Length: 355
Image (tube, rainbow, N blue to C red; front, side, top):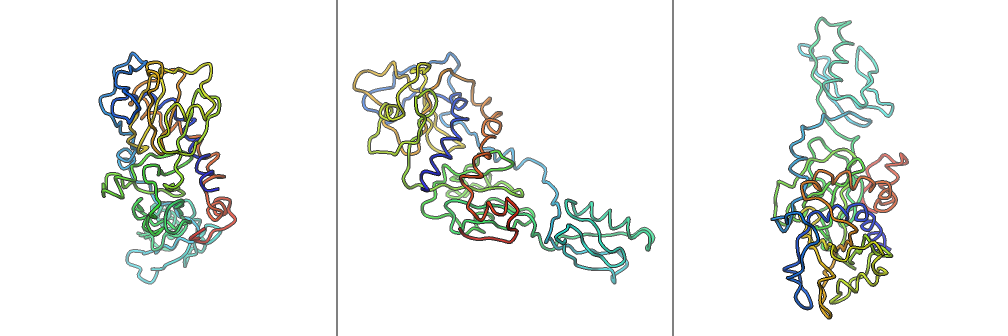
């Protein structure tokens, strides 16, 4: 069941992204083949992409964004300090109705406010009793914001998020990755969009450039490396996730997907391999392959049979979040554990760890 869920998830993602990824294409030169494909010519008139692995990682752009202020919510604990009035120093918790209770002024709406906004609100209320009050509001415990660590982490579940939380800290909170983690296929979902981050570089090589800041309600998903498949999409009669066999060839995979449609461009078959954020993308011209020759696929390969060719890597990088935005509409019913779904639906608010 788990492998079927993963297959449906990945097929959906790449149905909407496969056509545009054809813009990363290069002729096949280094792939394992039966025969020689090195003379296959790309069917596009555009200049070939110089880099064999276009970098689609969004980490650099995400880290360059200005930090968002922490917005208070139920269960958060704050400390209020009034300059020259030590007797008014107090720690208080945001209640379930989004209010705090504070000495002279009673209940104050706090939910959805930043610390600076709450400070202004308290100063205004205190001004009835103190001339020009100077207030400091400090976050003591961040308990309202949550993130979701799912898939191949030791303890999948829902975790409370501290301020300035990073991807590495979130994975560590979930106990780290399992031995079955498929890092090349891992990603973060935020506001219904997939964020391409190079988990392999981050975790295996310690590249902190990929250590993006987390936001409330982010979903970290790490698939497993067992029961790997190849995915055949685009202009085939049955887009499918196909179980990987030893020495499976390109044409065997296409045949299992029902063969080409009438609109298929056999000179524009794109094979994407490797990390989502730094894919190796190859263009195969099936019409140029001589009888008895074929290309060997590898686990996790995505085969896209194009009906037309697209633009270059720069265009893909600019559009990638828009391309993948429909993901969350099905992800809620596919990748979330029951516990995570309950929290999203408001049925549960406490910290949940595990399945």
